[in-house]
Length: 117
Image (cartoon, rainbow, N blue to C red; front, top):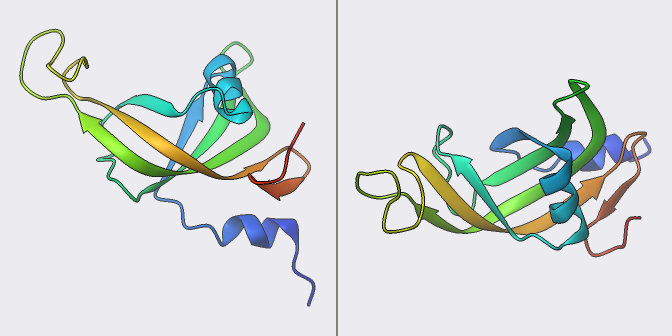
């Protein structure tokens, strides 16, 4: 049996699948952005995997570009008030990540170590 691109993607264990708007998604895609700020409604933890899926809120459609990440460092909002000592609103987290995989619509899949245009 041949190993298809879809099989390679599905073997990655995903803890969280989340939408990402085009501008911040593109910055992660290019490697320019290395962190995410999110509402902590998913109880993110170091070592968790996250699948970012590019979503356009204007068209209400997914672009087909996807990125798999591993959370490497996590900071929680602590305390009360509009902004906590971590610089976050209560209920939010910021996490640094390692990009594991990227792929485009149509199944073009490459590990992040290979350049995708």
